[in-house]
Structures are given as structure tokens and as C-alpha cells.
Image (tube, rainbow, N blue to C red):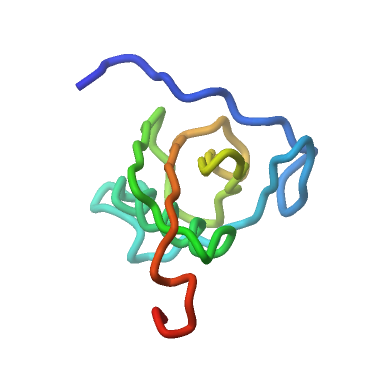
Length: 122
């Protein structure tokens, strides 16, 4: 277990919402009531689900072979979050920020070929 944050900083994108810049892309993700814990914060497990869903969207022929998530600060419930991501060299990087805040969660996933690549694997 490490006590310091190791993931790289999020790429800068203009404003909030959807878009792309410098190889990174961004989309909005609406928070659901089920994503919240008893204190009204987004449950940490939601980051893992989001990373898995993101990998399926941007690299459907690949699967997550290993991943790590860093929790920088809590995300309060309500509204949506901005999900920034970049895919390159077999690695998916993800940064999650509340609508009006700094990056709260970062993730790095290594991707590998999957049986999902063939129609029979689906």
C-alpha cells in the first residue's frame, strides 16, 4: 500500500461537458442515487464500474488486464461528473471530476486482447 499519489495530472479541456483536446476526450456521466453511500458521497466502487464501462466503450476488442485507482477527494452526490480519458499504448487513463471541482479520482488500466473481439465471444 502506498500513501502518495502517482498518477499523472489530467489533461486540460475547455470547460465542462463533452469534447476532446490533445489526445484526451471527455464525456459527462450522470450520478444515480444508487452510486451514493450513506454520507451522500459517490461510493469508491463506482470508480471501478465506470472504468470497466469506459474500457468497453473505447476499446471493445480489449479487456482490462490490470488496473489501479487513486482516490484524491470525495465526490458529493447530485448532478454529474466529467470523465476525461486517454487511450494509448495499451493503457487507458481516466480522470473523474465533479462539475465544478478538481479531479477527485484517477485510474490507470492496462488492456489486453479479449475473447470479446470475436462475434462468438459476445
